[in-house]
Length: 175
Image (cartoon, rainbow, N blue to C red):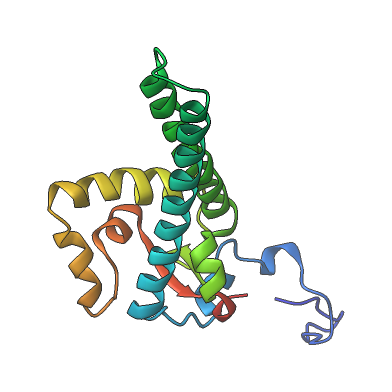
């Protein structure tokens, strides 16, 4: 474990050596408290309200600008639809970036919770966004939201958490 004296005794004050390190194990020893169901719901509501607010604000703004210019314009509906899609994609991309890099959406950050892998290691794009947000939520949509009810199980994990191999914890419990 640690450096030995010439006579074979272990020096407890010696720095660790390379063979003493075990890759990936430190996460297993850190206490991780699961986020409450209410905080998870609150974070999701905050994220959805932010998304809705951005889309509504931008879409109405474009509609007003096009309407003020007078009369019916060819392609105005298409412009509004394209702008609405962009107004949805930009904040979602920000949320996906935050999730992939920090494990927290804006709502999760505000409520002090974050997503981690089951072993406690940080999520990445694949586990945090691709599997959890895209694939997991598509599957949950096909099950009419029943997968969300899995949060009432002992592990407090929704279907999208199971798909991605993630859990949601209090942000300070593993830092």
